[in-house]
Length: 280
Image 1: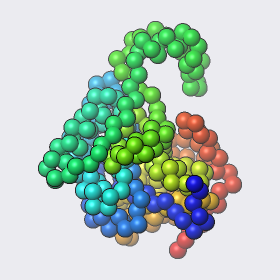
Image 2 (image 1 turned 135 degrees about the vertical axis):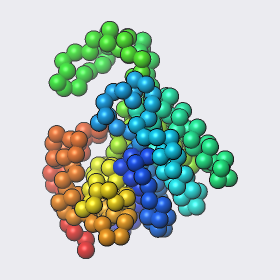
Image 3 (image 1 turned 45 degrees about the horizontal axis):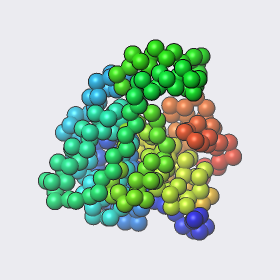
């Protein structure tokens, strides 16, 4: 069901990556009227070692610090908490590592959330067979997919869109911990689920994927996105920080070769007709 013209789905994005640092005061101050908390926990920026080893980029203590704040906020507000690409790579081992931290936090704080786990790791033998069948298409500039390459891999992760997160929430999960997921998909899941416009949901999520990187003070906490039927707004959680037309619009180029078009699993976002306006 689509939203009414005046309605929005509000998602609190506390940071650009779980473990990099969450400001507790900002998160709890931003809970009123929020429909979900969502953030990414992964990256390919640091190379393939984290996928190969299943070890997270950020320390266990750092991830536990951030996740404890978010789990307590989730419990207080009674809204979903979604974490994508757990443990940096989103491998099965990294997801299990994050799950164990979440269960430890739940015990220590007397919480009893329903936690869903979304696995993304693929069997190398299956991927090699699919490649031989011609069912795997490489991304440019690669030109072929050698089946032997898949057989030589210890860990292969698929890249999830929002659909598994939506399915987990519809099944009653309070917290969804995901394997490898696009940064944008984990933020877009709840707006799409609750009837926000697809264009605004994907666009807002792309801008907010790295938390405050789309603000004038990129290290100052997170942001709030409010996604409607035809538009979205974004604002920083920290007082004194700002989102400007430049900081917001320029984020379309972040980890993206085209400033107007974003390709996601099952979706192509075209922002060439988008207009950016300062609200205040």
